Amino acid sequence: MTTEKPTLTFGHLKITDHLLLGIAKEHRTDGAAPYKYFQLETKVYRGWNPLADDLKAGELDGAFILAPLAMEIFYSHQNIQMILQAHKSGSIVIKNRRANIERVEDFKGKNVLIPHYLSVHHLLFDRLLRENGLEIGPGKDVILDVVAPSDIPEIIEWDEKGQVGGFIVAEPFGTQVVKAGYGDEFVLSKDLWPNHPCCVVVVKKEVIEKYPDAVYEFTTSLVEAGQFVENQPDQASQIGSQFLGQSFDVVKTVLTTPKDRVTYAELKPVIDDFEYMQTYLTTKIKAMSDKIDLEKFIDYRFAEAAKAQ
Image (cartoon, rainbow, N blue to C red; front, side, top):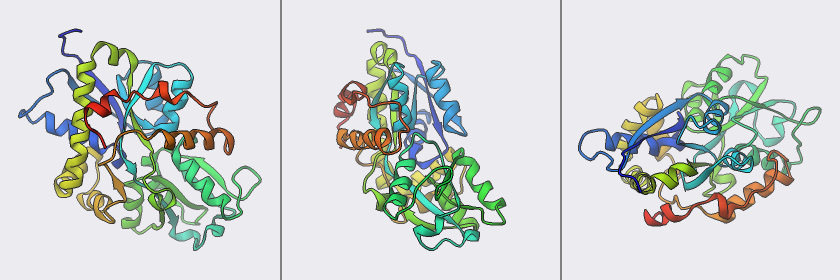
């Protein structure tokens, strides 16, 4: 055990799924209660592939990342482990106002935007279409296009002919498009799979081994941040507005309307959820290379010590 106080850098996107990282950083950089065992740095990315590349290359100590993408990195023998869920629920299906979408069947013949093939968004939209007799893929009913989440609002704004039927992505980009007048809510992800996992917190195994006290402290701060968001949505929205580069109104809507659009109170990994996710993504969609040993991927010690629910 070392007494060195390292600087640990965590990658993230500007999505409300990653809000707890902003809360944890804000609460520990105001001078009142700095971290005892490490210093926290954050690095923001526009899309998932650059974040994943930096995580694989060892440029990051950890990340807030799509669970299936993290599992794929683990499968390729990268030394990362999941320590916590970043949130539950929190994504949205938006229909493009100019695409004349009323029912699921109306997405036929359209392109739909998703943030990554290795995502719960891919799973949820695929399942929604299958349940309504539609298929995804070239020459089939719906084409999926992968787009960095922060680029989606501009694509919808400029799609004057309504060629893009809509998109499924983490908030706040859906609410941003609705408030700008270019799209309407089709369905919230929580209504497709209640309390579903999406993004998780991963840390490099060597960081866990070298600085366990830092990882315990960080995990506890995230669990506390989750309680803060649930209990103080106005203050959390203020911090979120700065951290995510969004208006207060957009972030407040995501956190409160409805209150369970995205939740942060239950962050302890539920292994059955991830088993379902990887089974679907390896058998129905074949987006993941293969299933992984979830018992080796998830390190429960930190969530349990932080009394995560």
